[in-house]
Length: 321
Image (cartoon, one colour):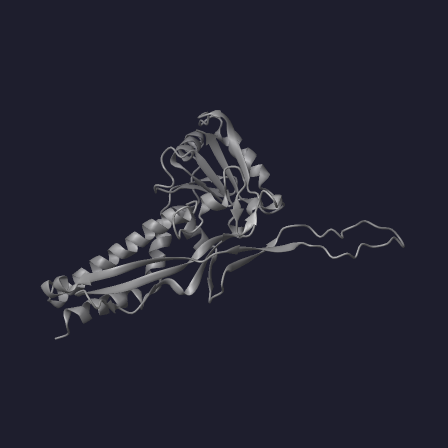
């Protein structure tokens, strides 16, 4: 009869290693922004690199001119490209069992139940924490720079190694509603229009609006007489959403998006990308046995970063506290 330890390990690794999308699928089902990035093919896998480098097309070619006959043409080089550099961040979660637990659950069915419950817990925990991180300001140790880092209330900040106070092309758009706590269902659409128009550049425009509960509620109330609800694909993905112009409007139920957060992000996901390392995309490593403990540990690791290649086409609506 196989040992409890080997049955436990086989069950966990069969679930995770042989089905590597299990955890990442669970993450996408738990987070509307991650789900949108995944559906748009914006989860990019890299094989390595000291940093994550994202090229920026930040300026127009200055040699464009109107001319006649033998006018001298401008053939000077145009500095139109740069790059943003993002640091890799890492996360890990472990499926564990002590020798005592394994021996107490000695029957094969009991071991499978133990492994399955620990695996489900690990996937749920990874999903919840990734949801927090993807909206974060990156202020916690080793935390990714989420939306609050990339899109800041004053449009400033250093993102991707570029200081937007020095290089103003790198500022995100923002609009603060006048007054204090003055956003209502009657005026929120006007404020949203202001942010939207600042972010439209030809065919480039926001495709996703991520809102805190209060702003989402105001916008929802302003539409209820019109009964203007979500696109079918958003509803099918399990996320409550509305429509604004051509964008989906969603809220996300986690502590970074509190009931009274008074914030609404306008995202152009063409320029947002979740970059992950192909060898650490919720990857299950070999089991580890402690030299001074009676137990088994199975690590699951992730390495990546949320990146942006155009901050100027990202925006936020805020209200004074």
